[in-house]
Each structure stands twice: as structure tokens, then as C-alpha cells.
Image (cartoon, rainbow, N blue to C red; front, side):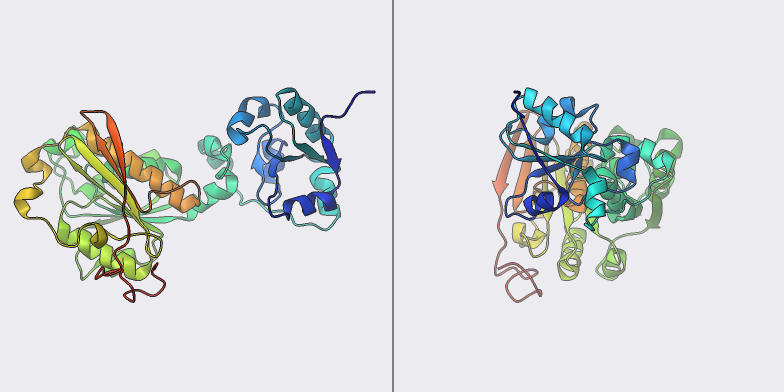
Length: 368
């Protein structure tokens, strides 16, 4: 008699497993069209035909508890046998599948409807644990303020637009110059002389028509920063003056809006996520601005063209993590990159309890 290499449970028993303090990893092995019709909360989508290739990323630990389900229980049982053959040892298949789950009166998540075009465009996102259709819907509803359409803002804006961030408000007061094109890849030679926000909007709309672009040709100031932050979920800080950074920081702290901050200098870049109530703010890192001669702009000091591209892409990465609620954003951590040495250094940074912006008692709900 052959020993079964996995356990089978009904919907009620499966619910008890999922409600346990340490629930199993829940995997839906159905096809994309079935997933689109509804799925179980917390499930990772890994179709039967591809799970042999994706399971190592989904469940690196082969002893981790895994609960599989399909429409009626047949495919999930077959997948359990396949995974057992790959060395997985703690497998459970839900008999009756999602059909039996629904018949038991248990809840099913109704997926946000994506158009066929969106399913095609974001197909690689739909395969990712922690993203999927639900995460993509979050991105399409997200509103991001891009402060600056230059070296950092250019790559960050392009990749956030490609990812499907639905609304981008971009502010910049400058026009495209030939010297920008060495690093500000959102602009083109034929748009020299055009306001940077208009040039950026042209490129973003050409890249992804899903994205609504709100172009603001002007400078961020203490007078307009609150209106710029109105309704946004996150800020990409591509500013190059301390006055703008402090104004942005102070308003973001008051409103509880996370800021993905970065800076570049010659061959070096830095990056962190400033999340009010969860970590330090910009004034915690820099209570006062350094003397002007200690922080010259790239027009004086120079900058390697690819450097802001790399750091800007990392800004976009951190922004997506925050918007999706996945991974470990760089909150309380400052990432430094020396491009010449090819080295990354990470520093721990803490909130200053005496900070004039986010210190104890300065903002409701600020972290202790």
C-alpha cells in the first residue's frame, strides 16, 4: 500500500489551519482566469503548470507548512504529490477546493477587475507573491508626488509609470537643457528648452496610458508644499536644495506621508525611507544644513551620469515596497553606494527625540 505524502482536509479544517497562530503558506494552483474570478485571502497564485519552477522562490524552506487548493481538490492533490517529489515535507491539500470553501459559507476575495490590456501589461506583477491582481490594483489607485524631474526623478518616474502607479504629480521649475541629457533619461534632445514637467509628462504618457500625470511647473516652497502633498500616498524626493528638503520634510511629518529620500554627489549616492511615526525624519539626519561649500550641486562638483539612474531606480523600488506593503523598506536605514569602489554600506539611523520636526510631542502618533 502506497503511503500518501500529503494530508487532505476539508474547508472547515483548512480554515482552522489558516486561523492558527502560525498559519501555513496558502497556494492557489488554478489558472489565471480562475484566479481572476476570486481567490482566498492571503493566497499566493502559482498555477499547476508552473509551480515546479516557482516553488523555490515562494517557499525556500522545504519543511514549511503549505496548504494547496484548486477548484475541486484534484489539481491541488496532484501538485502536492509533485512537491513531495521535490522534497517538500509538510503538505496539505484542500479537498473540495474553493468550490467546497464557498459552499461552506466561507469568504472569497473578489478580485479587482483589470482590463485585458492591463493583464497583459502587468502580467509579470500578477505572478509575484505579495503583488498579484490585488497589489496591481493598489498601484493603479496610488498617488505619488515627484519632487523634481531631474537626475533622480527621471528614472524613478519612468519605473513607477511602467509599474502602473496610477497618478503622478510632478513639480519642477526648470527647463530641459542639453547638459541634463547625460543623466536625466526622461528627456530627449528634441525637447531641449521645454519645461521639465511637460517633457516628463510626454514621456510617461507615451510609456503608459494608464498613468495620469499632473505637471506643475514651479518650485516647492513652504507656502505651497501642503497643497502639493494633498491626497498623495508617498513622495519621491528628488530635490537638490536644503530649503526644499526641509519644507518637504516638515509638511510630510505633519501629514504622516512617507518620503523616499535620495541624494547623489560625484560618484556616491545615498538612499533612505523617511516614514513618520516609524523612523527618523530628514531633520533627524541633518538638523541644520551644511555650509554651501560643503554641499556643492552637480553643476559645480559634477556627477557620473549613471549614478542618479541607479539611485533613482532604487527610490522607485522602495516606493513600490511601501505602496504594496511588502518587504522591508529602508526605514531607519541609510544605504550608501560608492560607485567607484562598487560597494554598498548600510547605516542605522534613529529618530531624534528632540527633533524640532518629529521629536516627542511634536506630532501626534510620532514614534517614541
